Length: 329
Image 1 (cartoon, helix red, strand yellow):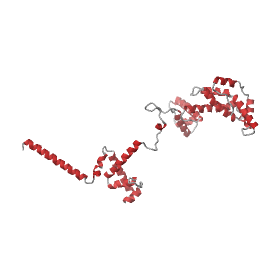
Image 2 (tube, rainbow, N blue to C red):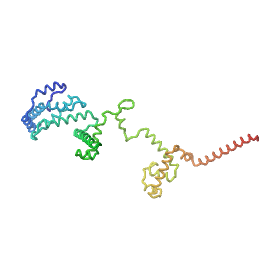
Image 3 (cartoon, rainbow, N blue to C red):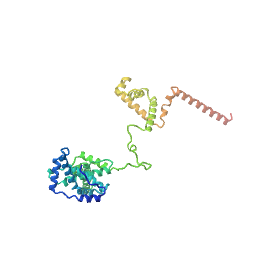
Image 4 (cartoon, rainbow, N blue to C red):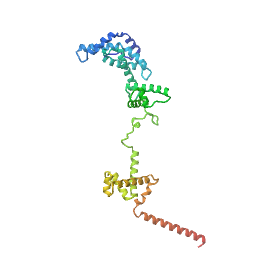
């Protein structure tokens, strides 16, 4: 690769490159043919001739890099950094220059210099890297949007903007996404304590649930399993088979129907009705009241009735005693 002056001290750098004279169009063509006709992998003489031609054409156009870099100053990078990146584009242009195309080297190199500078500005300012050609499309988007708004007093639609810019709607959607990424903030939002958020705080792992969700799901599942005992036995049996609640694999509607002796459609109806019942009881303020009797046993209802009768008799006897005391009996 050709040697380029150091850009640590910009003033000294500019004085150094001023010592190299500019090339005439004829000199550019001669150097260009040396670059094209010789190769680095050939014999040492051809390789040296090509390297010398590249180095001379680079040194003679370093002032072009400074002139272009000044147009991109005050955009987040120092002028010395812009010049250094522009030199990389100049080197790339010198290595690929072909005088047979008929253009001056400065015209050909300007594109490579601008691309190198733009790419550096994008990479230094944006967390998401955007290709240089996309930056040009973004700039056209903004210009055409402003023109349309000034003429029609409203923002253009995607279809209207596609016709104005002469590109497809699909590509325009990609440009729109690039604009969103281009305008996104470079730093992550601060946390509640003022510190910068970690990557794990911004992007949670959706594949694994947190401990709170696991505990909540486990408790909900336990309540659902208990609520199954509060609905019809056949409905509960269908749900257990359908969702594999008895330690087996979930069965299809047809497989459940074959086991319980019902049609596939009937099993589906039972499943829907049973799920509605479970949901209603699950959303109740006190879902435990639906299966309290089932947990105690089959005699719980009778025992509950007996206790109610006993307490009723006790209240009646108490009222009688109070009445007798009032009457003096």
